[in-house]
Length: 391
Ligand code: SAH
Image (cartoon, rainbow, N blue to C red; front, top):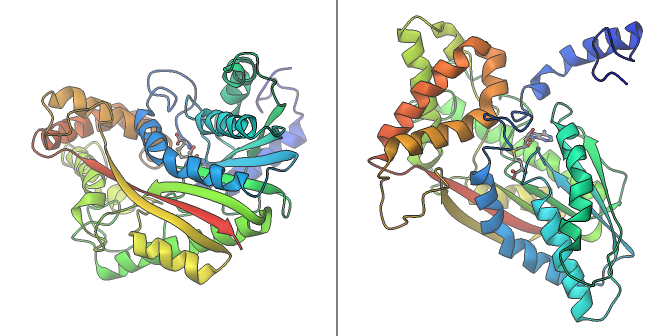
């Protein structure tokens, strides 16, 4: 059947009108998705940073699964990945987790469970590309170990915001999320006078700092309460997301990249390509908390015990392997790479505010600013990983 909601499709006119009305009310959520498809600017082609983060957090996840074995796996192990996006990372954690559980069961001579996997993201995520990759996933990834009896695995998509209920009560055994929970449910309110900034910066007034802290507090607390309903008692959750390494919310480690993006927007204002008021009214629905903020929210919300919390850093240029130097040699290559990574995640949100036509020019300027910064001081991306158990 013809896909989509255009006039030529299977969907009839009244359904179409209803869908359009719904789309306009969901706009804030719809601009957050990553670039779709498998083209040059797609998230699928520009997510090595997030892959590196998954790999660095893997030991915490593996320990959590090992720990779960002590409680015995259920007949059908229900896993959800929240903010799965679309690309090589989408099924990475799932296949690694399944392999780990199969290995554990084999070593202990017990029957491997069946797996029900739910992949969640916002409705505008490119679920089609994921679904098309599933036959290959079933065939290859899950058949790595020779001669092994395979447990059935069923993958399905769960479109919706993780700031709302996604699953039936007490239905999940394990929840995972990587590089997603730093996205807020909305841009905080009352961000006036954050002139020239698009997130927290050292010139942000204190009420702006407070607005971001409060929005994260409210969103993360909501996220925990909702998941607490959906997970079985004793169920586990591993979350990895951006954080800052210093308590001061205007510290350099989390604001620098966004300041470079703001600078690129201001360059375009100076060149008459973007309206200044447009930049002043743009702020990110994003927050990178300090670890103590995260601990306090988990404690106050009260549904989960915090088993492990680690903070780690990766270079924004994830291809840079030279850990001894604090600058990169090929600054232009590095600038382009970081710009492509940010573009894959930010293009929809920037295009919806500033229009499609500025995007190429904006990211050319951003790549330049990043390159200059990389030649002096490599941009670092800080992450927090927490392992939680439902009380
Ligand atoms: N987990 C993947 C993708 C991270 S990109 C990886 O590690 O590579 C972040 C994803 O979170 C995006 O696909 C974005 O659409 C999704 N996301 C952001 N806010 C969300 C929300 N409220 N509910 C569900 N998904 C959300």
